[in-house]
Length: 183
Image (tube, rainbow, N blue to C red):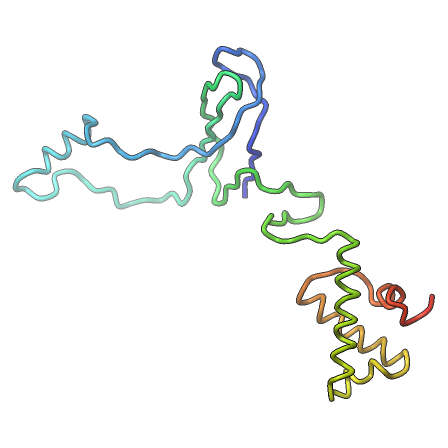
């Protein structure tokens, strides 16, 4: 996967003749003109009887196209194109990869530590409320001694982590809520 930033500081071939900021977009082929000489010749040859007059290419081997970057100077609006290598996945202005981690798509919501702590605390309060009304013996253990409480809270938090993906250890959470003292 190739990830290219939306702006790039590079040499401007136009009036500037110096390095300036360029806006980067991906080149896309425009609609074919019906008045181009090759199209007119092909259409006139196809007219009338005689079937298909020219060969139709059927031995396509390439699975990718070469990516072409279209760069526009922010000062003089001069445009230039820069071809880069072939790739199957191209991303323009995606999130940068941090060392040792995969890039996270920007559509996922990321919480800061304070929000995580609040979410975990609120979740545990909801579990305890549910446990007090539930007839489930496992959830009823939330009102039992601290060891059973710790086990049940661990199960609940693991479930919560699977669903929401929030990090943190159960002991720290229990300390913050005030169920257990410092260990």
